[in-house]
Image (cartoon, rainbow, N blue to C red):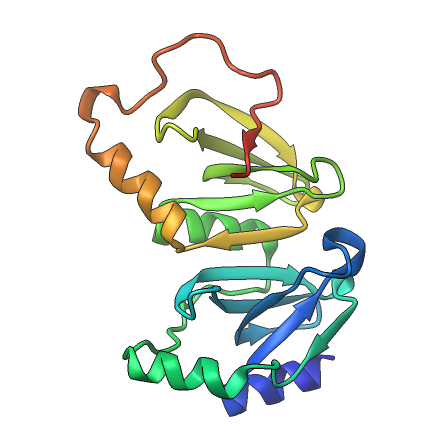
Length: 199
């Protein structure tokens, strides 16, 4: 699989990736391979409107199948070219998961973390403030774009999908930056698990 992913990266083709056990047989991800190693692949996503929309990191062990090139590769590449959109390497290293999360948080401001085997219908969004070989600590942001005033700790290897640099993360940061003194939660009551619904 790694060899084929590298071919797709070299040829700048869109790939379609399936994770049947986690997503079901009718869901997939389209994107350009930016980087890959024996554990992870970093994609720049192509969304349904045929625009580049942030990055996603998937774990190779979760991938059930993939198509290279993707079924609409030529069309997608043509439209992106007409729009002047080009693949950009976010320059994050895949070698160490804990370091990766810190780097993404520092460079992009927010990271979206999915733990689909534990919480299949939700995700956490925020910035990782600490990570080690076992756990990470997340300062989370709610769907109202306000920071929670406490952090939450999770198991590092419960993560099944990582996303960053997309339109939704950008929207949260823009709204939060505009709030000034109201940038943190106004209520003292939070969900026990700190889960933000994935809308």
